[in-house]
Image 1: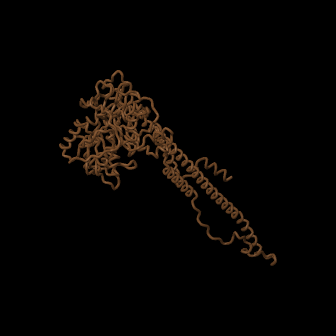
Image 2: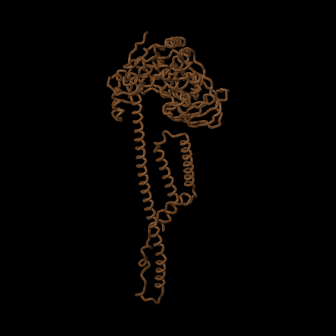
Image 3: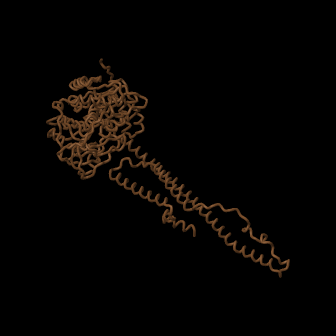
Length: 618
């Protein structure tokens, strides 16, 4: 049965330039002399280094553990020795460094012990954790951790699982050759995702300019015995976008404020399902990927490259021509110029294009916007790019958000058709970065305000506790003075009573001189009194108060999470961990001293507290 196809608004049809790189099969790139494996290769938290300098690692060994649920592990691409854990240039338009593990290969390419898993015999949560620990992320370019996408929305069943083989970006052909040569493994990987999501239907979308890939996938589906539908979709950029492909295959339009799973559909790249199959069926983590070498080269081709390979070594395999002046990572529509070829291959490196002035002519000077509306006609998200441009240029960032700036996927269609040669996408990226920067500043100010208010509340609480202690001490001293006065009066009263008794017993005394009865002259202090209540152990009260105060302080510290430690360097994290360890040791010592039955006042109080109490008692 033919699958009904829908369409999305906008889009363009640039020249594809894919043919030169698909003339030969996938080749295996040789090992370089150094591997620079970044620990942060996905959206989410950076992996924490688990190896040390000088340590020998094996191929597939975990060298960076996932930092949180929205994170993925990093692995050694081959066996060798860790030379350094340092900041190294990243394959990013910013040109900033990122924490990387430098490995010197030993040439043995010795695997770590691998444990295949049967996803059908394990709970879904355990399978997701295995994918996270294997470093499986979206290999279409977004590098979103796949295990997080395999969690369905509450109360919404997944109707369609969409597999993205469209690969609409010009020059890029890594997914095309992957489907041609390894179609059966892709089909088996799709079964893993289908079972985890309990999807009722699987749709594999491939652009109709890839007939060999369509035929290979159809044959693999038939050989494996699955009922997946392989659908050839019209070639139009950006049909490879997740929302656009979902729209074409299912007719569902995913709003910007919702996830696709809330509409009962999920989308994965063919390279992602292939890597997931290798991770579970063979126990192989993601240590390599297919990279297209294209552009101004003598030998354009697709290579399977180890992650961490310097781009300089990879580009040399293609034979750059003499007039090559720069290199792009990604594609000409959404890619970016590489800051340097010293950057390594990462999981997001799907295509490297050698550029020349002849192939990519310099952009003409930017002209004023003529409000022709061409950008709005081709926008696949039905935005108004010319309005966003005006507000971005005027730094009216509030208005850009009102015009849904963050719905823009930066596909480049608007810049492609602009007759005034305005780099619209660059303006939109600038506006987004400014908004994010201001939000970070606001969050920092809010955190500082919260810390200030917490400090004031703590100082007020400490002052109230100190006042209570002083009042209690004053009451105790007053009671002690009264007791000393009573003790001083009692001997004098006893002597007076004895003298009166002697006078009564003497016969020489006159009746008028006879003393009064003892009871009559006895002071009130000698009158019968109630038995005093047993005094509480002051030391026990003091110890209990100290322990309670320490527990309250610990609970308050646990309740207040630090908000300025999101993006710390490895060295800063190490220093914080050392400080926390010293603090925990000191707290443990204080608790032990407070709990000792024979502890004296000096053992549970600091010298400063003893000095204060001494001044108070003077």
